[in-house]
Image (tube, rainbow, N blue to C red; front, side):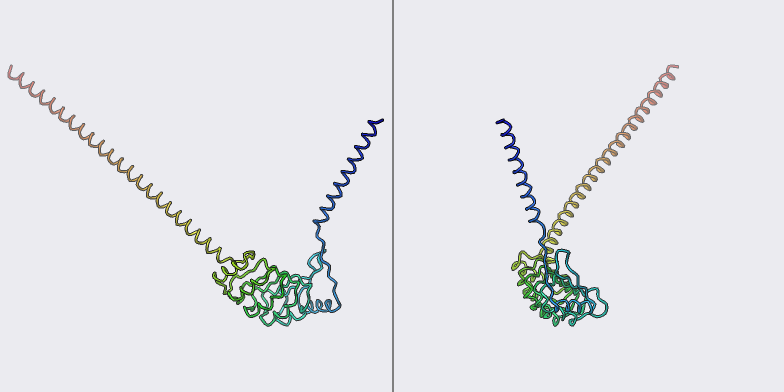
Length: 276
């Protein structure tokens, strides 16, 4: 009986342990699940989004569990300019804004200065310059900024350095220099700059050194091979000459021997003739 009670107690303990483990695992899974982002839209917000759509822009929810909005005018028909940004003013639930290839310039950026929830901003191939970038300083949640094909210079990079949340910036085909990129990298080593002119220069120098070493090695190999071939050819020619000299010597010896034999025969004939 005592043994049965012990076994029952052990089984009960094991059950409790398994249940606790399962609960902990469920908590871990729940902890890893995205909590989601809720957005409560006012009538004014809804009207602003309707106006954006009316102007040809798209306004889409980020994801099923993320109610923030992604705005895009890059695929809109007709000319898109600063006026199209007006409905966005003060909308803090905007997650991404794409104005790629539009006519937006520095005068339009104040209209998005208060979209403080903005995480991604596409301004590539627009008329934006250094003068307008200061309007973005309130966007401290901004993580992605694309300035490809704009008029920004090294001065604009000083402004970009102040966007503390920024993780990635694109500066292809701008007036940014390697000195400006080096300064920005020093101020913000955490920021990914594309293209990284400093690293590109380092890579180019390494590649030049590697190529030079490769060419030097190839030249040395070619020289060594040429020397070996020249030596082999000289040895073959020397061997050939030696063989030819030996053949000539053997031929001369044979000829001399024949002459000597012929002379001996003649002498023998003369001796016989005298005897007769």
